[in-house]
Image (cartoon, rainbow, N blue to C red; front, side, top):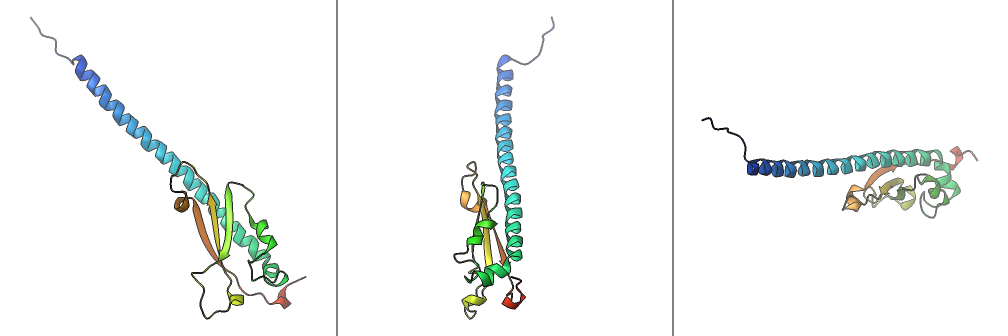
Length: 148
């Protein structure tokens, strides 16, 4: 008489459970990967929007320095024009305090910090992962060089 050898039902069920747990782990890793890919896309778009704001500020540098007379940033109505059209991104401008020299008068400080942030509720720590900061240094434009 010949004995048939094969797998028992318990062995098959245990292997299915192990494979199921492994596949759930892979699905979780894939989900996190997609979340970070989406955040990376937002990072790239924010970087482009920040660079765009820097370039647009260059084109109106005479206005920011001379016509408004508010040291480039303070109470400047044209700052709102630099905001991205996409409402998901918020642009904040501030003088760059890290590059300020104590001996340099406030009227000579032209380093501007551009911070573009966005909201992604899937990532827990929104403060660090959901913003970029760019620093632009602008030159002094004499009022005689500004075309009215």
